[in-house]
Length: 271
Length: 283
Image 1 (tube, rainbow over the protein chains, first blue to last red):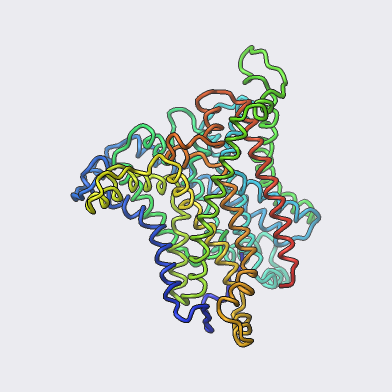
Image 2 (spheres, rainbow over the protein chains, first blue to last red):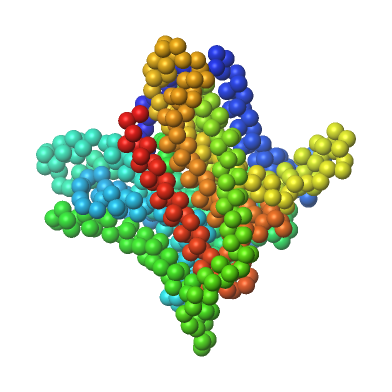
């Protein structure tokens, strides 16, 4: 998880005398990853309602999207949910990360190991389990249940990302502040938080994306009549879709790709 | 505040949350899996093994589980075959700014909505989509689409999870000290021999993490099989979804989910053993 000092390889070694073959692999891999997305985005500007060729440039699907209140409402829900859950998960994650990096205590390894199951078990299992929990407790599905579920899947990530950043900070700086008479809170706000800020921001962005993209949890926990963007895309695919889905997907992809590229350096060795 | 109280205050919020909404629900799921019916209204509900009995007595469910494991296997193989060369090329054939830029390009899809990527495949593979259109231009008009077939599911899953595989293998390869490779070369090892005897063994922990990170979500997936698989998409994940969304047989769904969870736990325990062994190995 730590940032690697070896971004630039001075002594390059390749098993092939010409790295041509390897670069071909690289190109093929990237093509596989991006070609479908590029085609989908291109079709957002195509007149055909069935995503069919030949290509005729048209902005009609973006105009339709601007009037599609269902899709826009779902997008707004996703945005609000992602912001609120990311703030919660980042706050709680920062506290737990401080405990892991500034204290030694019994059971630390166990508590850290407990972060792995929520990340690895299929979201389908967690989603139906939460559905049964809320049913059993008599809690109606609402935006609150969505909020509770999303933060649960974000928390392990934020704890891990912020811990990685905090572990790399020199504790001497905090000790210096303390020895100069700063109270713990003052040290925390004036020294620890500013230094850990890149990690905290990266964790917040990560949490935002985890929530904004989450389909499975939302699908099972969203109340009838309330939907998020991924849930809306899913039901559109199942019941008949128009390239308005391409239009909104294009916008969402461009925004998430840009934000990842902007903060990319910090996220480079995120989980 | 004494250190103990501070520590509790720091850890309690996050871990209470994870306990209440992460681990307790799994317990409730176990409880539901032994019920005869959803406890609703005045319904007569009793404890029973029947849900698990159904799994073992009817070939349908065990076949379903095998099919899902097989799908996970194909997906993992696909990711490995595509991902290893990609990670290798990224780690060893480019450097400096290019490396950073290309690395980011590989992880960007990982940050984009999985449903958007799935939808992209539907657009590409559809009847009038770009593949069939191109085939038509080339004179092959009778081509049928692979959308709604088994290969389409695998394609979608490989596309969804490839970045995990590339990421973990890349990190392992990047950690290999180039001096080891130079040493092998100076001792007369041919490039391929260096690869088989030095690079591959050292990258195995990364490969193993990648395999786990791809295999586990793949066997529990239901969105890709549902949307890309059509009739071929009847798998453990989709059948579990059906129990909650269509059939309203929550106890059976809970039992099937619990069996899936057990499989996942077994895999994770086995993997942690293996990973631990490779980590304690000096080389």
